[in-house]
Image (cartoon, rainbow, N blue to C red; front, side, top):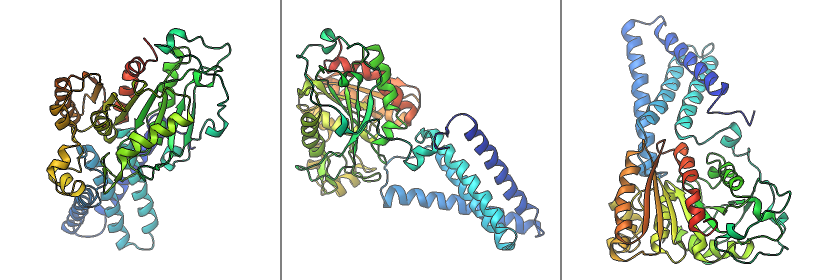
Length: 434
C-alpha cells in the first residue's frame, strides 16, 4: 500500500468518487432534515461562511503570522481547502442534532471528503507520489555512504571527462542514492541530512573525479523532496545511460534547516545558510567524495526557494558557484514584501539588503565567466515575470544566459521537467561532456 500511486491509476479516482459521494451525503442529510426551509438554508449558508472564513484565516496565519511560505497560492488550492472545511462544518451541523446516531458517520464522511480534497491539492503540486512519500517512509538509501568503497585509483584529469572515459565491462548503468549528515562547523547552521546521488561511474575502479551539482529544494521543503517528487534518481540514471555511466554527483543539500524555516539563503538572524552552502558543504564534499574540487566543475541548482537561493549564491559567490540553474525562483530573497524582508531579516537596512540582492549585484559588477539558465513553468506567471527580470540583469552583467519554459506551473511537474531539460547543459558546463 505504501507504493500505491496517489496521482495516477485507481487510488485518486476511487478517492475522488468517495469524496464526492460523502460530500453529497452530508449536504443531502442537512437539506432533508425536519427543520423549516429557512432554517436549513441558514445552516448551509453558515457552513459556507465558516469554510470561507477558516480558509482565509488559515491562509493569513500561514503566510503572515507563522511565515510558513511567502507565495500566493493558486485559486484552486483555496477552493479545495475550503471544500474540505465545508465538509467538516456540515458534519458538525448534522452531528449536533443527532449526537448518538449521526456523529460517527458524519465525521467519517467529512474525513473522506477532506482526504479527497487534500489529494487534489497534492495533484496540483505533484509532491507526494505515494502514501510512503506522504509519511516519509517510502525511500531508503540504496547504499550507506560508509559502504561506498573509496580505496580506488583515480583516473587522470581529462577535459571533458567523457573524452577519456571507457566504462569497465559489466558496470551497472544505475546509480545509487545515499545520504549524509554534512556538518556546519564554520556557519553553525544545523542542517538536515543531505541526499546524495552517485552515478554508475562512481563505482568503477579506477574512478574519474566527477563534477558536482548542489541541488536545493523549495520552502516549505526537505532534501528528500527531490528524491521522491523530483524523481532525481530516474532523471540522473537516464542521463547516465546515454553517457556510458557518466553523470554528475548530485548533493541535495538542506538550505533551510527545517521544513518551514526560511533563512533567505543569507547569513543573518535566521541562520547562516549562505556560509553553510558556500564553505561548509563544498569542503565536506571535496573531502569525502571523489569529485573535482575546481569551482568550474561545480554548479548549484534549485526550484522555487531553491532557485532563488541558487541565484543568490551564483551572484554573491561566483568564485564558488560560477554556474547556476534557477528553476521558478523569485527575483530577490523575500518574506512576502520588500519592506517586511528588510525589516525582519536585514535589521531594517536597505543597504544591507542591497549588498546581497542579486539584481543590485548584477547592476553593479561584471559576471563574465559565470553562466546561468532560468526556467519557469508555462502556467506560472509570477515565476516567468521574475525570470525575465533577472535574465535581463544577468545578461547585462556579461553572464552567459538562457531562458527556457517547460509545461506546468509552480509544481513538481515543472521542476522535474526543468532539471531534465538543463542537465545536459550542466554536464557540459562542468566539464563532464563536450
